[in-house]
Length: 181
Image (cartoon, rainbow, N blue to C red):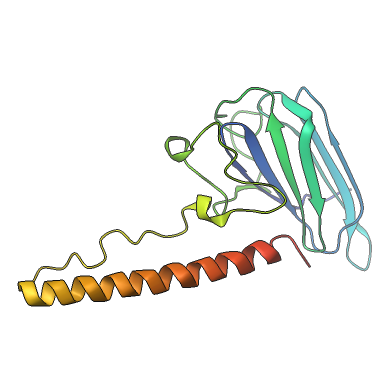
């Protein structure tokens, strides 16, 4: 009997990101059908334990525009939706979500934050700026006398710039390590 690996997902209006977390996967097989059938199987571990995922996606997909990337830690899929619209959930099945299926909060963007038409996330070279990983609004908004306020604002701007540079560096590192072994 096959086991289920952890499957994480996130979406944009025009695509769904599916990440199967299965380190050292071998004999990876994936099948994606236009009507939304998603099948994954692989073996992992020293005893070649079989893993399998067989789900019906919420709506139809564009198989030709979808992409996959296999690394030593995970198998990542960018599934292009046949119609650009937000899905209520990943799978057609209503009711309780299977325990192995989880939201990928690292890639999640709310519907009202999605810029739409623009492809803000290239599958081959992820742009982590689109993930809204931090908010620097409100820095330097403390009340105080005007001299202290000006000094605090200047210090905050310097601190904000340093934080932006550090975040940019972390984003570059994360992008290069994403789904790599």
